[in-house]
Image (cartoon, rainbow, N blue to C red; front, side):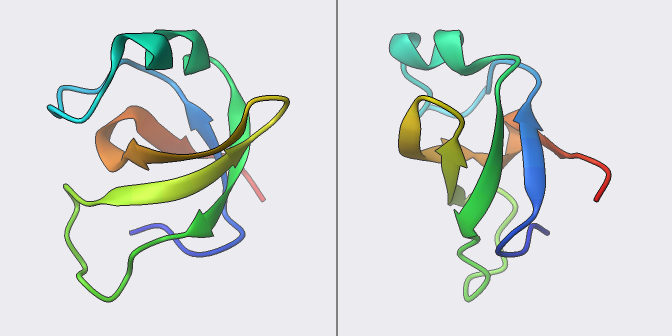
Length: 69
């Protein structure tokens, strides 16, 4: 589960149906979790990530990995 402030990388394309073609350009980018949606505690839920130079987006969790803090 991700927490607010976690540093993450979009390391792969998501298999989630909410993944859009334009998100392919996010692969390899780093960002910070701004809204982890921890109330649901659902690994399939979207999380809000502020990506470097790309703004804030809601992204499926299966394409994210936590970076060393």
